[in-house]
Image (spheres, rainbow, N blue to C red):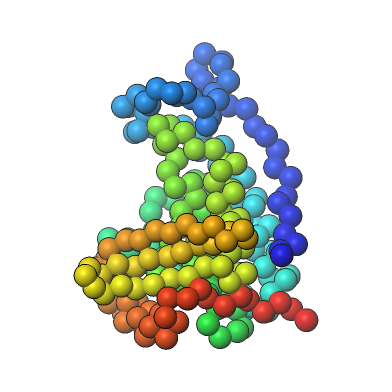
Length: 222
């Protein structure tokens, strides 16, 4: 069980042009969002707690586990495995930290903070996870659910509850599976042809040896 504790997050109130409080997370009720809301990203600073929590998670992992720490904006290049052009989406990099556990067959993590208040996480060999998944007004995401997802992912990787697979037949897919502490598993997959050849070749040999099982837990510091 992790001894990580979420830092205190101050609540902020955001208002529209008429001074009314914007109830993010409940804006549209049972109705579909208006079409023009899909093209608007208002008050992105509402996601600023993601940076606060990401910093706390990185500090917790460094203090708790035996890891190699590489803090350099250049390691942000770990993200973008499935990007068409290999570039990071959108904003500029504020901080990037790669944590590599000093134990065989455990998944590394790279945490990237961007200047639009978002966080990108590269987990293991082939998967990138953005937080928020989408910041547009139509999706109406809140920092609460996004922070929950960020913590779940990062702690699952460190605790050995995260796995990856690379399927070749009948179609080439990259797939991940993430188990919570109760054994409930969520998963996702994407077409593998977007993975750069050099990454796919290296990952294939490692994941074949893993036989689809989860990565090992990180070793704790003595």
